[in-house]
Length: 64
Image (cartoon, rainbow, N blue to C red; front, side, top):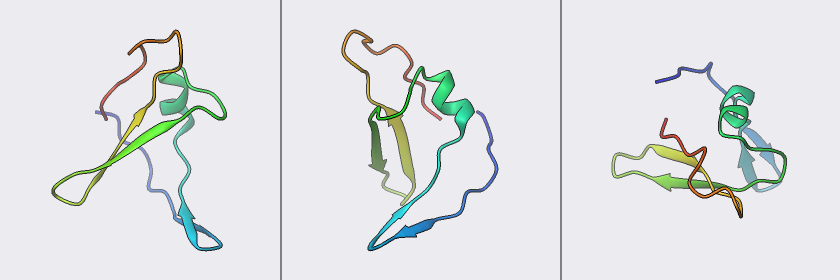
């Protein structure tokens, strides 16, 4: 399991955002404008997954 530093929430109008670690993005073969999937677990945590791009298959998906 990779451990990253804490991130701060930023508010943009009525929404909130958080930056993703560049190492995670690169290790999953992602680039600007790629999609991610966010799941809410039963214990209230969030899981973030890269969404495979056309022609990529499930390559690059890693559970963190």
